[in-house]
Image (cartoon, rainbow, N blue to C red):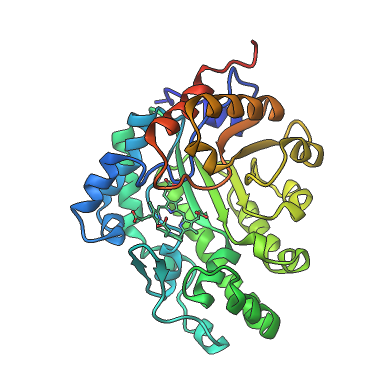
Length: 344
Ligand code: CP3
């Protein structure tokens, strides 16, 4: 059976469409009262991840409530470090915390990786199966992974950080061990994404959330080559590469063998078009804080952005939607895109 709404996939594959598709990073989450209700009945965020039927339910909530053109599986990028052997806790109001981190080459040698690590993520695959069944081909389903560098950053740092200086210090002091760890992470990501595709995802997005804290030379050595490996290993579905803060590497990202380039809100649409060309499919890039404004202004700014990018554009924010964003403003954003036509 084919998709009822395939606008997102047609755009990702480079076709010209009647309007741009729209979805929001972090659309499955605390902006929705339905999510908060399910979440409060459980013992924290990880408990929700481990309940595949509920994870599927919150994946579908934004499709019902917001009318977005794609669903993204409810999960987290940190499931991979955990499958490789580094347990983490999601601490309320603080974010992820790893009790044990990687501090040496010996730690890296002990990690599980590749297929045997990916196979442990059965709860994610079960959530995908439930989602595929209940979504019933209404919209495409996005699968995702953290990029190797971003996962490396959490595995060394052990938590979020403004600077990730521990992780960057490791790159400078232990370049060889760093490459070994990045290779193991990359192999695990590839195995994991292939399994996600087997369980029905229609596109995969690579989140390189901490790309922007590396210097251009470091990103060239420790970031991009591993993303390139993932792009050449994943052939069956389109790929989106979202490297937040990596505007300095936009030309190199544009050369990756991926279908969509994700942009954060610090990039001018006109500059992105100049670097990437008019035919490259881009995704983004409204400032998440625009949604604290009012529906009229949201509408104006969103139309301005759509016109600036032109065709071959998937509308999204430049990063995840903030949990305290007024729901009516999120709806105004989505509705604006759905009412837009390139012809008018
Ligand atoms: O709707 C979606 O986009 C799908 C779900 C999704 C989550 N995390 C759910 C989540 C996705 C795609 C992610 C990816 C993710 N996780 C990234 C990459 C994207 C980005 O934001 O840069 C990163 C860096 C993480 C790691 C992570 N997970 C952090 C730093 C936090 C804490 C911050 C926060 O928002 O609370 C999380 C927790 C998390 N992941 C939540 C959700 C809905 C909040 C959990 C809750 O309900 O309390």
